Amino acid sequence: MIKYYNRKTKNYEIEKVAGEKYLNWIYNSPMGMNLLEKFLKKKLFSKFYGFYCNSKISSYKTKKFVTNFDIDISHNEKSINEFKSFNDFFSRKLVESSRPIDKNKNSLISPCDGRITAFNDINLDNLIQVKGITYKLSDFIKNDIIAEKYKNGSCIILRLCPTDYHRFHFLDSGICEATVKIKGSYYSVNPIALNKINGVFCENKREWSIFHSDNFGDVLYVEVGATCVGSIIQTYSPNKRISKGQEKGYFKFGGSTIVLFFENNRIKIDDDILKQSRLNFETKVYMGEKIGLKF
Image (cartoon, rainbow, N blue to C red; front, side, top):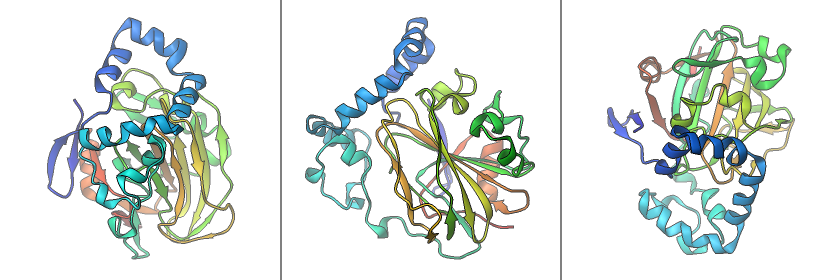
């Protein structure tokens, strides 16, 4: 059971987990873990499943998925019958009015829909994956020089579950450098898995870039793939001017994670998010929603 905080209702809610029964079996049984290590975490499995989700035959899954997880289809640009495959639905675009963007230049916005955890004054050698499990930033991005820029800075983790809108955007205007790609495994990023596998973020396939934000300094923007994520697709043009809220890219099928790092004294994260993070609860947020302020 995964409980998260809904900042709009100010209540805790239980997350509906896609494939929860299978996740529990895989990560909590010897047979499941053996299958995971030998096959499920491999690129071939996610590539094969991604191929299926791109095919027309997978489109039958869409209506059932929408019904089972109460997804509001009125926000979609396309009608439910227009999606050509499950991945077409999964990486769907939304009408602009469904995700209003806080245009205040001092407002830090969420770059995606997801469940957020945030930390200030981070220790680069002891970043928190989940309670009791940590990793190093230098191991995460494979670059010691870049990692050092974020000493005592802030870290924001945004977990996207399969039911979320899976396009991610820029949190400010500015210029983004080219993406660095790091090969890796395809473990789940669901808390069920994060509590079982040490250093998942440093094991999984991931991509990172430096975003030269107009108002929040140089932001390290990392996308982490997961089980059944066939691809991380970058749609932005490197080293060209970007506007706040502009699309950066999208994930194909699967739960995924975005991790943001800010330099010291650049942002002030909203108090309710920090409070819930200290209590070990994620907070549900939407793309374009204010999650902090310029320091």
